[in-house]
Length: 350
Ligand code: SF4
Image (cartoon, rainbow, N blue to C red):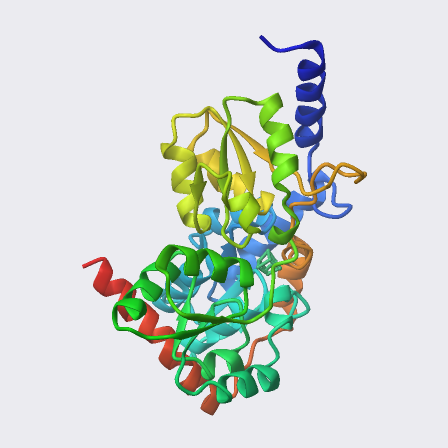
């Protein structure tokens, strides 16, 4: 039986999440006008829109309506490379545009803004990383997809969170020692699961690092039957209290498959769009990021993903601005560890 306090807490949480999140200052009319313009431009420019799960739901909806896709970074690049269109508009962050270019050099890759980056990418500059690798030549270098083309080119393997465990298990079976970069939380999770000898780079995602186990436990008192879904870029204390841990695609699947009707989700709230599609009768609650003294309940949204908007998608298509270029020699080197992951993934799914 819920107490009065529990009920008022529930109302507070529900009101917070019920607020309509319109991008910027756009009115409904502006949104419809932008969407119609983008649909026309995509046809005119022989372009396809691919969007990450963390982008604004309006962008995800538009990608689906126009035959594009909404996916994680690897699937975005793979999908884009198989499309007949000559231009890809990549709504996400810069390393996703670069990955698309690495896999599809013949295509023109446009982004709503090249300013959209990632704290993991920023925190792993190539010169420092290269020196670190050079100092440990007997270690296999495994880097997360959230890195620059230059860092990928220095690696033996690129992994995404959806395949990291399998790749590292494979390397552990071969008796390899690895350098892992850049996310220390995902690295700690992978190390714990596989027991591999790992040297870790000290990077973190500024969104996932902020989730608090204490805040989630407090929220569980308000929603005692809720399951907790956690992305492994979150701190260990948060991963430990999860009912399901996984990549974006794996969390969407868990949202559908778990019997719980209420789900507390510790990843960017943009993912709710696809979770709601996968499990329309369930309720999704943002995991808290604020500590007890904080003024906000949750800030679970990536500031760089939020830079993607309908307005700058129009500008990208109209003006051809914010095009992604990767030096050809670098691209060829960066493709090798990426292709290795794709081949490994294809082998697993055979
Ligand atoms: S959510 Fe984190 S990992 Fe993803 S793009 Fe933003 S900063 Fe990078």
